[in-house]
Image 1 (cartoon, rainbow, N blue to C red):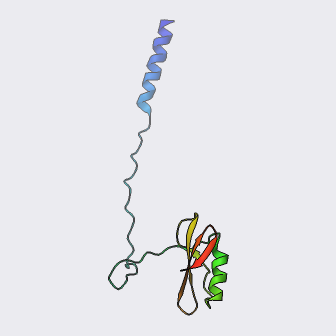
Image 2 (cartoon, rainbow, N blue to C red):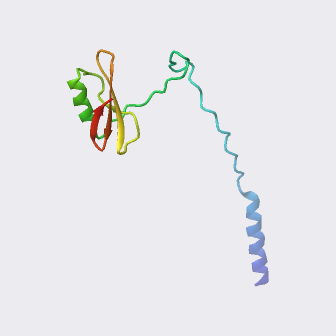
Length: 110
C-alpha cells in the first residue's frame, strides 16, 4: 500500500514538470492621437464635440425652435446629462443655434 502511494505521489509530482509555459500578455499599446488637431476657437482653445443625443424634451424644444423660425438639422440634442434640469441645442438651417433649458419638462428659450 505504501508503494502505491509513493508511486502515485511520484507520478503526480512529475506531471507538474510537463506543464506548458504560459506566455506573458503583450504590453498595452497607447491609443493613437489623430493626425489632424481638433477644432480650435479664436483663442486657440480646443472645441469639444458633443455627440448627438435625444432627450425626453427634444420634441418640445424642436416645436419651440420652429416657432422662432429655426428648422432643419438633426433636431434638438441633449447637451447635459439627463436629469431634472437639461439643456438642449438645435442647429438651424440659417446657421444660428437655438438653445433651451428644461426643468422637469418645462422648457424656456435661453
